[in-house]
Image (cartoon, rainbow, N blue to C red):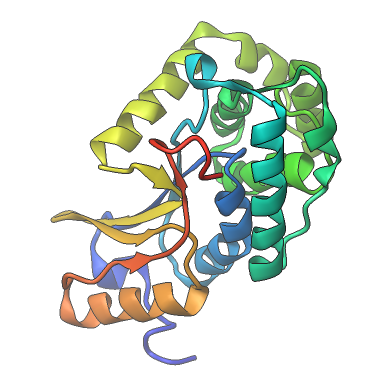
Length: 236
């Protein structure tokens, strides 16, 4: 293993970590999922997951013909670029509301139940929505996924007001970190919080930047890519 690959949290800073800000119903986040999994395995750094809130509650949109047509084209492009599977059948639902709040809440509930598995749980909810056509706006669907995933007591935690408050706190933290689109990856240590990547970015591009930082400290570079923007309803 090369020296850069052998970097550990201890060699960087006592409390260093990567912070991932995303949304389980963000298509570019689904495209980014394999990259994130590789990064988590590559670096001996904690990877914290923050739910950003793409279209929660009042920001939710009905899946009309215009949005469905845009998403179909967009998802096909992401599938071609990233190799991630997409089941397009969900775009034919009538009267469906693209509300990310239940899925956002589910990620936070899963984190409360088993924080060590939250990244895998995030990916499981993504896969259910994008690759399996599951309606993750439905509480029953989410509870079923959680039971199969082994998250004991998930349903009770999902329904607690404290979980809703924690989810809203995630949204606020995302904004405080300056994130305006997903996926976003940041590095934090005792001295700084610095952006690493905004948008879908390759594993190689991110590791080149991080490894350079570990040896030379942070520069002005940020790996940038394609993302789901909060201020653009037709970006995801």
